[in-house]
Length: 309
Image 1 (cartoon, rainbow, N blue to C red):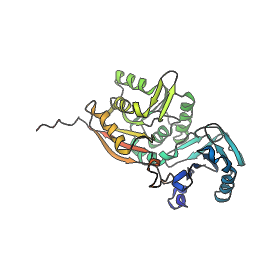
Image 2: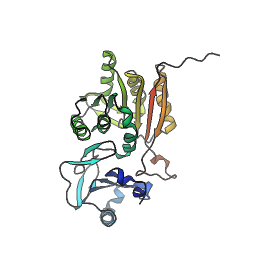
Image 3: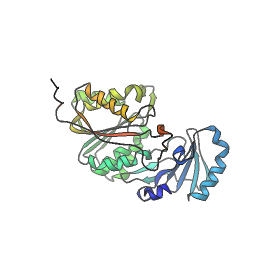
Image 4: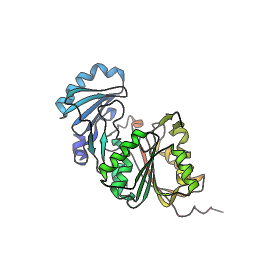
């Protein structure tokens, strides 16, 4: 009822149907991907309830099929299987999703409204998408008319899907480049070569690890990441910064951005900060569930003048 009243169904066919505590169902996550649903339980204590939860979904939420899905499995428990190639639509992008395999489905719906509201600002800009994953931001930028889009990620399979999603969202777009490289290495190389961008998207995982690049954690490396990105961002450029790390408050996140900019006397302005969309509700008693912080920032032409008494 909440999703219908908020108009979510009319904007997208990929959204959250049940958001754990925010829908008074702790530990239960249900996502819609077109005509299919995925059910995820966040604690082993709910395993005995999966049959009952599935029965309730069948009765309450029309779907062609329902999968029980987590990091280890994706099992069809009701209805027909999802096709091998399955595409969903948001206001800003069309994207391929993977609900028939374990793990994440390939599209983070909690960033849907951030993409929709920000994509028009990317028209005509040279856009760099760091930690591009499957390229939702890249596809949104291409569809909005970006002059150029560069997607950087360590995963070749993710970047292949990013190419698909750009083509799905902006058929015939010829200015997308996928770069398989560590983001810090890419930024360092771009700075040495004098390459700059008009907009940079920073949306990293909370934690990641690779044999070639070691570990990345938002807690330890977000500040140097923002600093490195600002060094290749044009004056009056857009810096789009996101984090879903539950260990940081919105105020502390903005302080991280300020600290990173201050290291090189950059004048960074925050235009707006967004959180989760309405299909990811939270309850006041569980404020940690408001985990998403997305800041739209811009840089000034010159650093601020030092104040002198």
